[in-house]
Image (cartoon, rainbow, N blue to C red; front, top):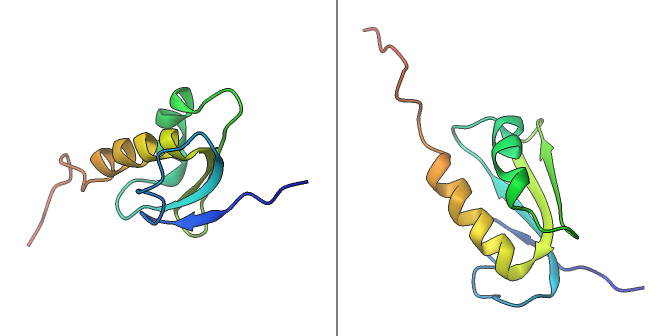
Length: 88
């Protein structure tokens, strides 16, 4: 029985290993459920990706190296919507 370390946001960026870690990725603009659907195909066979809608975050369990890649993709996708009308 081993404990999988947990990191929040970019704390695990320096880890590029195959060791399993848990990463919490907080989102600002994109709904966690939407990003979960977009990223699920990139999670390894032994990994897990869950959306925490209450805090609008993703919880990822995967290798540290793959989580680094998932976090980079999430960062690129978590941007303000371009199709919103702004009314003053």
